[in-house]
Length: 256
Image (cartoon, rainbow, N blue to C red; front, top):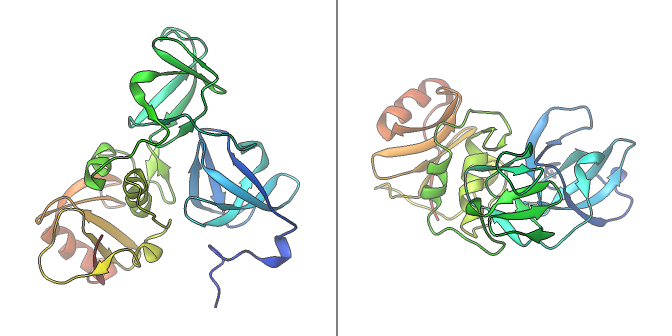
């Protein structure tokens, strides 16, 4: 049985053309008026497979996820020159922090410079402080360090940004930043790495039915969860005992 999250519905496909997300954040939905599956962020490359009047049926190229995105969230593909490396940043109407802010951008957003000043990069959405940017090929080294950036971020089902994310959104952001391919949902992420038993190491992933957490060290997990409604550190043994009461035991322990 095919998975509609990664297998296009041939009835909705009428060709392909490249595009990218042109707004700070866009919901990827199972149907044009359906619930949010995931979110895409500025600069994410996509392939448009079909269209309705107001939505494009597309594939996200960072993870293969398929769904509907509002047409006005899309723009033509461009070559990124910079990536947001801080947890979040603002774009401004002018290269001046006292000018009106025009957009809020999350970690990992990809930008194309139109021009620059000593302190800002001008983009289609406004002027972004250089302190919050790295070159387009920037990569982090440690997924746990990236996950830590999101501590305190509100929990949001299907979220993928500083404004809100869920368990799999946190893991995906952390791994993609380190150049590691990562699908969008926790059940898909269970295929990552290799299955291990015994000691838990920094960066390991623990899975429950419908949930994933990353090990910060042998005793501590970092995860976005609905119990805390935020991304938090939690004692591993305490988390396992708590989650067992609602969702059962750990079903996989993967090492990347």
